[in-house]
Image 1 (cartoon, rainbow, N blue to C red):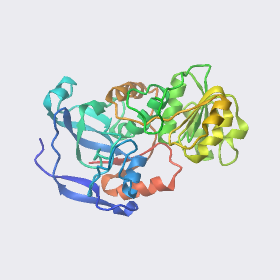
Image 2: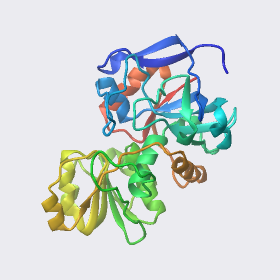
Image 3: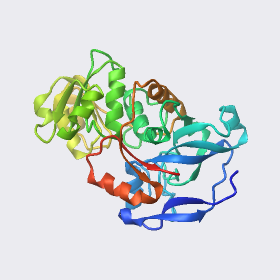
Length: 340
């Protein structure tokens, strides 16, 4: 166990990016049974981080708020195992010095990733792919698992807070056409690559600045939403993954063939009678930590079948600037904090 204290970024109050405070000399947490202590090398930032910063303290489906200020935000880490606690960690084959990455304790705000050290449940971790660095590994967990659980395999039997039925991914193959709205973002660029891995034809929707990038990732067709409305251009789609979601997601219903599906990453309101009349399915999943799925994604990352695009990196102490970058939007891939 290290004997010194650590630095971390904490929220002492809710508000804009300016409330992210870089604190020194905090106690290093101690791992409990089935956990390891990770020396963090890089941290991926995600929407829940700025939701928490802005004042959201309850995760959908969780019975009550668990957030107590000050709090360390963040869930996505890549780093090195510093200490192991209990038999569960040893049974998982993890030892001091192993490189790991993971989505920690999600859905909750208990990840505490914006720090030099973090405790992590072994079940949330996978070995970092040897072929990529910590920055790229830290960009993968939440976005990659969201795409995986929406498109490939749900991977758990926990009920969704957004719908009664379990989410069921659509089978993807060479006869499937998938439209991805927001294809250049974190979830979107993973979803595009996973759909291509399964052999599907992919239509990518984003702003024109991302056309070349998405073509390199394998998009078969590109639609610049600043110039055209995709619902007016395409029809008979098997699956729409709308990474933007929300109220506007309903417009994609008209693009689907009968038997097709719309998966909005952020739930919107839909008329059940309308979807029944169209013969389509609308389904939402809630991403959950899953080390086994992350290991599968890691093998694709190691092979180069899927890659992590990095929009920008910032030092841990510059978390405010990273959140300001996120607020400007039009992100290509992931924003990552580096920890020295």
